[in-house]
Structure formats: C-alpha cells, structure tokens
Image (cartoon, rainbow, N blue to C red; front, side, top):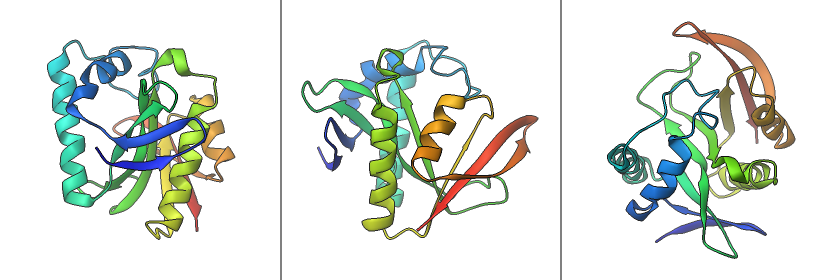
Length: 173
C-alpha cells in the first residue's frame, strides 16, 4: 500500500480493493451525491468497478483519487486527489489536473475536506511541479466552494456542460 500524503489527522493513500465497503457508504448516499449529478450506487460490484478504474489511472497517469483515512483509526472516510483529465475536454481544457474530493456524510463539517484538499494542492505544486490546478463544481455546492477558496482556488467562470452549470476554479503555482 502506497501512502502519498500524511497530514495532522489524515493519511492519503492509494485506494485498495478492500475499500469497497467504504466506497459503498460514500457513493450510495444521495446526500453525498447531491451536487455531483450521478445516481447512488446499489451494489458492491459498482464500487469494485470504480476502484479498478481509479487504480488503472494510477498505472496510466501516476496519479488519481486517493483513499482518505483517519490516522488514529485507519477508518476510510472518503477520497480526495488530483486526477489527470486527459481523455475528455472540460470547459475547453484537456490534459489538466482536477482537484476532487468526496467524504462520507458523517465526517462532514470537521475540516477533513480542507485538510486533505490543501495537502493535495501543496503536493501538486511541490512534489509534482504542476503549474495549475483546476476544479469545477455545482454553483450551489457552497461547502465545497468554500474549501476550494480556502485552498487558494479562485473562481474563473461559470460554464455549461450537458445542460448543467458548473463553476470553474483554478490556482496557479
């Protein structure tokens, strides 16, 4: 198991097949998915497929979303990380690093999102030597926007994709 980042309270490590039950708790909750535009999953097999796709990104791009676990208990609380968006274009951008995160609902409001996101921004700039990091989100997702702003990402514009509106944010090294 590879650990990428340790913070005061968190470990960010590769997502493992054994994280399927944690991923299920995350992606089966409609509150977690409220601003993402996907339907809750209903089976562990869907989680296993997602985990395989994420692990394939590690091999292909050397980066991807990581499991976020509590240091003191090793409990899976969500995922966070940089994803190289190279197979599609988002808001006229291709081959860019997208900052994303998702946490199990019972762990919201405790600062874990900010702690993980800030560590990832630092990792992207200092370790990967990325010049820009991007993120996009539903304009109504105030909590996530607050995290991104606190990490230094600034609002650039609102764009439309497949009939939905998104706020585009970025930070430059």
